[in-house]
Image 1: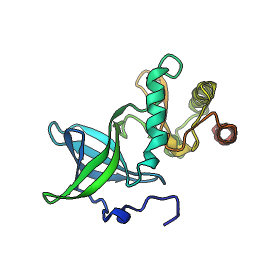
Image 2: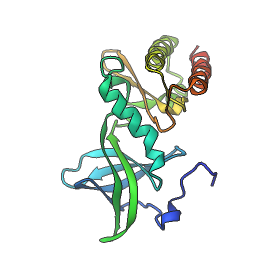
Image 3: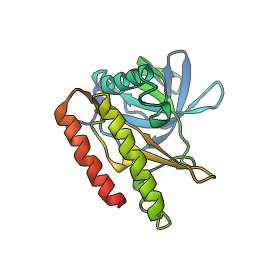
Image 4: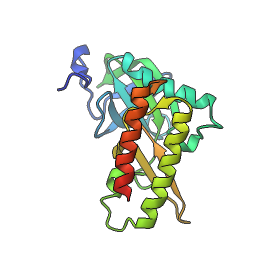
Length: 211
């Protein structure tokens, strides 16, 4: 395991399917591990009281939550400059979330709870580009929307910090409209010229692949 990946065993916790986490006043069952991510372990979870699904991002280190929460709190204050359709909705976070296994509390973890976007609604740009039916017109429209979102983000002096195809989600509606969603702001940085320049390089690489 690399140095930048969280080691859940350092608190004696290794999350498993069917574990329950308590976030604020609700309990959520871990149903499926979502691949990827270095700063968090990400899970599809189901709220016990109503069966509604969410995305839970968990880490043993409180500091790892800072960039993500700070970005979402900032977005809430500048909604006219960076609309909600550009990023996931944060539902809750808890720095003392209990982990429950077979009815017993086995430790605590830090959790950010996000709105769940079903795979049939949003797919990653990485997966979309592997689809042979992804036309040049669709690629062009995605490129334009992606470029505008990064420009707006940088106008606010915020760098994403980890811009790649897996952190860009695309939605195509029945009437042909396309939505582009940026996810995973755990590496975001404010007023950091190096991070802003890194974003620009990563953006250009993606745009060149989109054609």
